[in-house]
Each structure stands twice: as structure tokens, then as C-alpha cells.
Amino acid sequence: LVVSHSPASDLEMATSPQSGDKRKLSLDESGTSIVMNNGTKHPLLGFGTYKLGFIPASAAGGAAGGAVLRSAKDVVLDALTAGYRCFDCAAFYGNEASIGEAFEESKVPRESLFIISKIWTPAIHDGEAAIRSQVQEILKNLRTSYLDLCLVHWPVVGKHVAAYLALEQLQKEGLLRAIGVSNYTIEDFEELKEHATITPAVNQIEISPWLYRKQTVEYFQSQGIILQSYRTLRQGKALEDPTVKELASRLGRTPSQIVGRWCVQHGFVFLPKTQSLARMQENAGVFDFSLSAEDMEKLDAFTTPEAIAAFRSSYNTGIVRDTPLQGTLDVTGRKVTEN
Image (cartoon, rainbow, N blue to C red; front, side, top):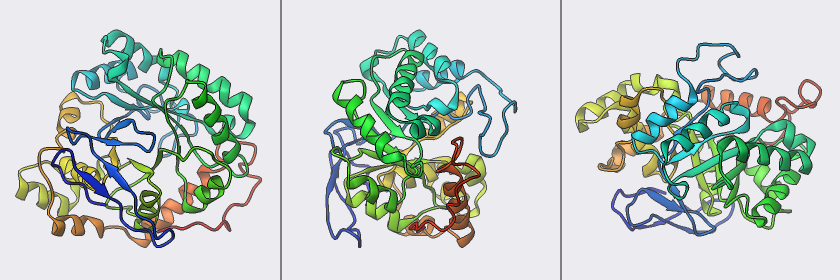
């Protein structure tokens, strides 16, 4: 799937070797939103909120109590000023009350916002009552009566299917406009598909030129499921890559815009995160240019065996993280499509 930056285009999905099926996704008239399988629009550009104002105890790459430069409220107010309207939140992030204050203070109409949150692993493990309670807490903290999208944060072993079915019920009750999953492999989705009555609208996974798992991408796109991309800029490491810097220089763009454009041109939702207003504005500049097929192919080719191994290690941790299964269940032998 490659997305043109021209508006109002239909996008034909790549054919997955598993499904042999082709489905279509469509951009809206502006070319900046993609239509989900429930018929509603999802912005292709969003704002990530992980580690804004708070660092969770089990955070990857940084322990609780680490440096917090600004409150989540102040950063999100800047993002709203910069024009962001889609926000990727989560119960795990521990900052949704502060973000909710920003939404309220900004006076941006609720219908202009696209608010995402995710159910964290202990609630996934504990089941429907815990999930319902967490959704109510999320809504209270974010100061909204509904979420535009709610995701199962990790496919917790033996528990994620029931968690997703609980979200189906909450969607029927009107608390969630759309539901989806996060960090799911092909195998996790195949397990879910046997029981779900509502196809997930989204799968949020780590995607970047340095972790481009093409078989997985093509499979989910063939199912009509939008992919949200996190860690696309690799916490700033992407900005120093020589190939990216060369493309940026040649095209008169910045490295973050090159990587962001690669993301949206593939049809992935781009979720950059920064505490700098100038960087927010810079990261948003991905819709008024395009990359050539040759340039896209260059960026597609960065993934290494080491990156795949790091993905697998992170996945093995995530599917039991912060649950009673952690440290007691060996998941290293689970079948997972890594590419």
C-alpha cells in the first residue's frame, strides 16, 4: 500500500500471501484522514503522549522518576495550538487526567478531537469488570463521554480475546466509537478472529524504516485494518541516519518529515511525540510533498535481523507485562510471524 498525497484517492491494499484478498481504504477529501472499516475517519497524523509528564514504573527504556520536563497538560495544549486533533493516550501512561485538563481548557470542540486510549494489561488479565472500570476511569480522566477509539494494549496470553469481546460490548453501549488492538501479531489476530464479531479498526504496532515487518503489514492491510505506527522516529535516532539526512537535504525537508512522509505514504498513522512546539509544527509537515518510489524502496530496506530480534524480545515481555503471568509463564516458544 502506497498513499499518494493527492486528496480524495482510493487506496488499494497489497495482497497478503495469507489471505489472497484485496480490500480498499480511502482517504477523505483533504487527504489527511483515512476511513476506518466502521466508516468513520481516522487522522493520518496524531500526537503521542507516552512519558509526557509521567514515566510509568515498568516503562521500557526509562524508569519511573526519570526526568520530566513539562506537564502533559502543557505539552498537549501546545500540540492543540499547533493544530493536532488526534491524541494517542493510554491508561498505562498515567497522565490522562492532565491531558483531560488540556482538552477542557483548550475549548476545542469535542467533535473536532479524535481521542484514543488503551486498556492496560492487569485489566486485560482480570477480565470484563476490570475493563469496564478502566474505561470509566479513562473517560473521567480525559473529561469525555466517549472515546473515538479504544485498543487492547497487548495480547495478554489467554486473556486478550475476552478483553476484546468486552470492548465490543462497550462499543454497543456507545462509550467507544471504534475498537481495535495494539501489538498484535498475525497469530494473535487469527486467534481473535475466531471469536470477534466486530473486526478491529486498527492495530497499533511499532513501525519505522528500521522495523518494517512487511509480511505483517501486508497481512493486516489485506484485512482492512489500519496500522498505527509508534516509535517511527526512534526517539530521535532516525534524525541522524545518513540516508534520511541525504533525502532531507535533497528535498528541502527535515529528517523527521522524511520519515513521517514515509509513514503516511505507506498508509500508516504517524504518531510523533515531542515536548517542543517547534518540533510539533515540523513533524506535521508531511502532507505537501511525496517521496519517489526509489526513495521509498531505500527506506523500506533498513530492517536488520537485530531489529527483528529486539521486536521479539519486546513482544515476549509485553504479552505478560504487569500481570501475574510475568516471571511464571515461558512465552519464548510461541509461534510468531516476525517479519
